[in-house]
Image (cartoon, rainbow, N blue to C red; front, side, top):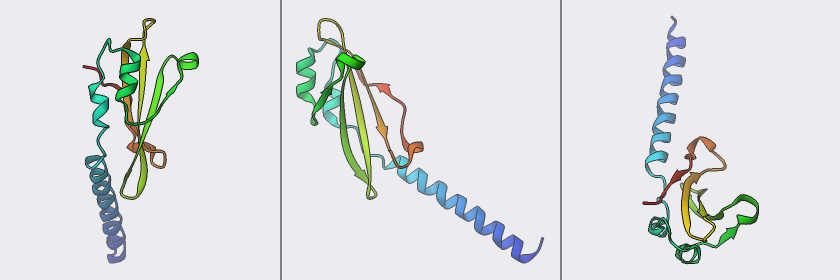
Length: 118
């Protein structure tokens, strides 16, 4: 292997390594979910749950059977979002709440929805 080929391979490997470090830093510095969301409880009345939210919730129950709210935040100069879906039963009590971190520009940084009720 020539000296030039070894140099190109070394630069390529260093680039991949630095890219990996950058991703690790982005995952580690992900903005936290809004604290108010962790106060949601199973069986809580819908109106009480919506009153806890720092951002306006859109009523999607007629179409999708949930309320949705989106909390926008920034990290490293990019816009990111936390999104919350609140599912209620026929008595308008919270039966499930799912949250996830979403990055529109870099979808691989997004997380899968997970239940946040305790």
